[in-house]
Length: 402
Image 1 (cartoon, rainbow, N blue to C red):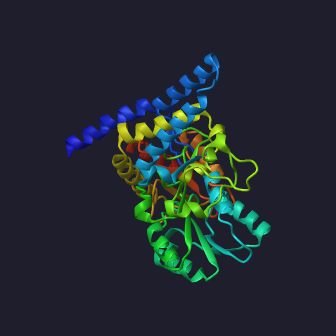
Image 2: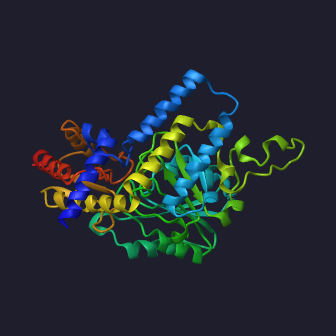
Image 3: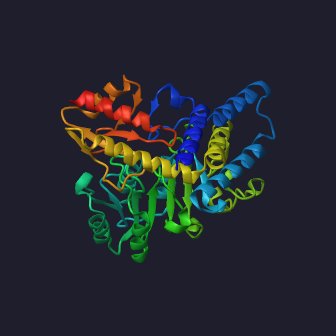
C-alpha cells in the first residue's frame, strides 16, 4: 500500500508539472474549464505559428479531415462507441441542438425533461415548443438528502405517455452534482418507445461512460471540461441505428457524400456516412482540433482513464466529508451520487460572495448561475488536485463562514 501511495504521489507530481495551471492556483473549476496539458498547449501554439508563417493552402482541408478522424477515434476509445457514431461539434450546446432540431418533431409530440437541466437544453426546447407546437413536460428533481433515486425514476416513467418521443436528461447535473441512473432511465424509456438524449458535459472524463453499455440514443459532450481540451470544441454521439432519424439542420461540404458530385437540380442530398453528416468541418479551427486531440492522447496514454475516474470520485467524496460537518453548510450533492463536483450552500452567504472570498485566497471555485436552482457554490475535484488542497479549502471555508 505504501508503494502504491508513493507511486501515486510521483505520478501526481508529474501530472501537475504537465498542467502548470494546477500549480498557479488551487484549480477546482474543471466543471467550467479543465486545465490544458502541456502537450495540448504546445500543439495549439505550433499549429497557429505554422498557419501564420506558412499560410493555409490547398492540402489544408485534407489534413483537417484526417485530424478530425484521428480525434473521433480517440473519443470512441474513451466513451465506448464506434468511430462512425462520433461527430465533432463546437460545444455541448451545439450537439444538443443538432438532435433536438433534427428529430422532425410534430405538433403535439411530447418531450420529457427535468427541472434541473442546463439552459443549453431548456432554451432550444422552448424555441422548438414555440415554433412547432410540441409539449415539454418537466419532472421535478429534489436534491441533497431529499433526493430519492427510485422516486425520481418512477416520476419519469409516470410522465411518459403514448405521445412522448424524447426524454432529455443530464448524466450529471451541473446544478446539483447528482449522477442520474442513465442506464436505468434508458431501459424504462425504451420500454415505452421513447428515445433518450443525455447532456454529458459534466460526466465524460469524470466518470466511466460506455455508450453501448448505456444503450443511450444520443449523447452530447464537452471538450473543454473534464476532457481538458480547449474552448470551441464538443462532441455528439448518435447510436448508429438512430442516425437515419436525425436530419442535419446545417449542411456543409463535409456533411455530404462526394461533395464534387452534388446535383444542384435534385431535391435530395446524399449525406456523408453516419455521424460525419453532422459535422461542419471547414468551421473547425485546426489549432483547437489538434489541442483537443493531444488532450485526449494525454488522458488516455499518459495518465490512464481508470486512474482518473478512481481519483476524481475519491477526491469528491473526500471533499464532501471535509465540509459536511462545518456548521451552516448544506450539501446539495447527495452522498454516493457524486461524480466530480460537490455543491453546497453556506448559511448567511450568497454563493457568489462566498466564491469571491475563496477566489481571493487562490481557491478557484464558482457559483452556479441564479437560474440554476438551487444555485449553490460548486467545487470540481480534478484528478490533478491533491488531498492537501482540499483540506486547505475546507479550512478556508470553515474560517470564512464561522
